[in-house]
Image 1: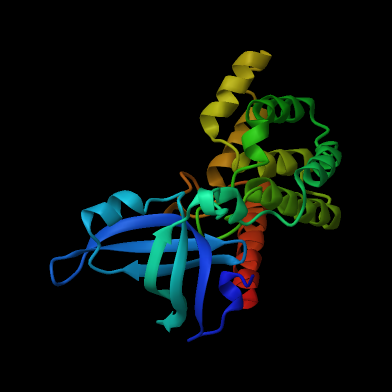
Image 2: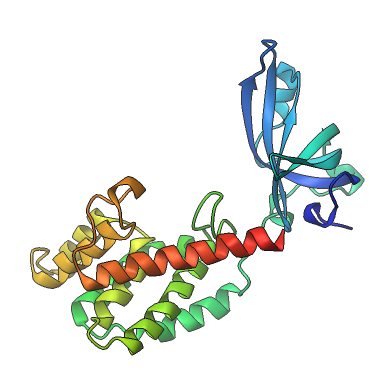
Length: 267
């Protein structure tokens, strides 16, 4: 069966899709409509369901699987689904009802990512950084290898968070090899923690490990975490003031940008 993105513009289809999001909005005529985002393993696409009834709004919610009869269109140069009709799937007919069939996954298995991740962790030779990273990751191990890195723009798939981190660690290793003045332990610890959790988790880890959170290593690591988006307008509380913080920001931006452009070109 063809996937959503395997259909051409103006081609009609009838396929099973996951409702990723369903926002109820008001049209100019005063009637409600549902702004859907549909998804299968090929990607996600928006579509509007006009003149939605209260029953429709109650029925078509995120996480549900539907059989959608429609057509692929182009709206403002973005792919869009024109909905002709849709209905919820019926398990008694052997139709899929589980969201797991329709979500995108990282291009590596969880086991492959864990193995490479554990190898790269040996690059953190500073004992303070190593203990803090192990402490925090130990609490979020399962979520770390399952969660997406973002809701929509980059690495928005199962395992996206760990795959994004792994890509950044590879870049960090290469860059640290090119520039020996970079503190490799600090950079690697910042890469791993910056997208797992924030400043307060480092404080908790220090309390549990008996590490003084005011000592230099901890302050440096906190700075990398807080500055990783690079600019205040991008959501960072502070701008990078360390070489490693600046490198981390660019690694994060580079990996996210390459992934977003690659996804766009694929489609």
